[in-house]
Length: 495
Image (cartoon, rainbow, N blue to C red; front, side):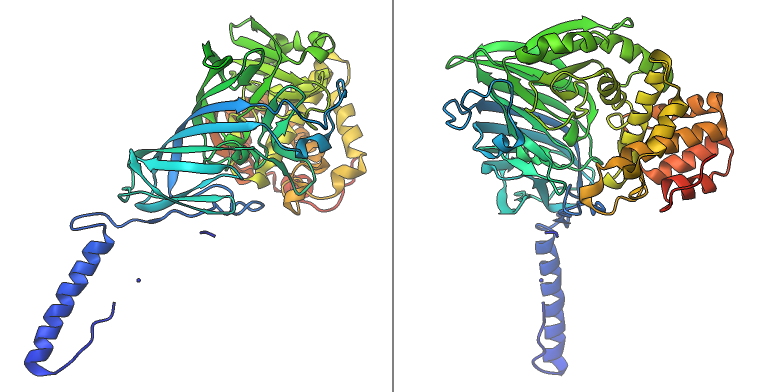
């Protein structure tokens, strides 16, 4: 996945002494050459994967990305013969046709975590025109989704470096092991990029594993009349050449690449603020504006409720992107602006906004830890229903407990990559959270939750990190709880 000397003896005695001296000199010179020249450093290639339990080739070793500056130009395909007069419906099959053309420049600032002679970036499908490292042209090779760059000079451990990749093509829709679609999804009037778990590599090169988070600047140029929405705050909107408009977005807090998004379309946008002053930005397809208005109006209230229950909000803005129905198959907690496939209901809005704490700020260390995100977000739905809809959390627990699908496998051990978004990760994951609450009591539970989001703010955490944290903070041995609810194969008896 990853992705050279012999000295010959010719005679004894004096000749042998000369040979030994020559061999020593040759070995010294060979060593210097392997070091990149006299006095240089010895670099080795970074790994072409981080050995994730479900996606072993995803991500790359040898460096840590600090910042992405993505400059994109998108030309939607205007003359699609397969669209017809479909009104509001664009089904999943529509995404497999050709996308418009994307031209991009990715400037990636990273820190070397070892002496590097070469390193990899994840990129699916798009054509690479050139690549530089520290301003010098780098040798480039491709093997599947692995783009290997060999710098002109080896990089030293601890060195901060910048690589620039220029690329273009028709970005692809990726079909996952569970048959869901992600990557670059074409829509009636543009496109939306969804990246969980691997789709972000379909529109920009990078280190596409959730363990490597970075800040982002994303500028997207689109035809006049369309808007380009992304994560964070809109820094500028300016007219460009050729009847086009450029939208520049900035995300200052760390973000996993699967949470990055670009949504292009004729959106109706609205800005407001939460009671505590956090900017709210919503972008809604005109066909679902009316149906979305009531629920989207609660975004400020949901955010304030989240702060009370989960701790300080971890980002500098919030909002939502609402596509027309079936432009995508599912909602996704894209950072600061979750994407919804049509007008969301209240529970779905709460779920995706809760992810800003659980999943986006505290991000799974690997895809095996996904239940930590989905279990908490599902439990947030239960808490909201108790506080505002007169549905006790216990009733939500009993309903989930009775659903057969939640018992197909333990939430912390999905059998395959195709299972990481299945029911146990959500429903049984939420049951784990409720059992912790029962075991430690309400006061200790909310203290643990708020302290957990603070301790791992803008970081990554594993299941082991979480279970150890809960036991340390509560002072309780919860092995039986973990064995039964988190890892147990069998459905327990509940009185």
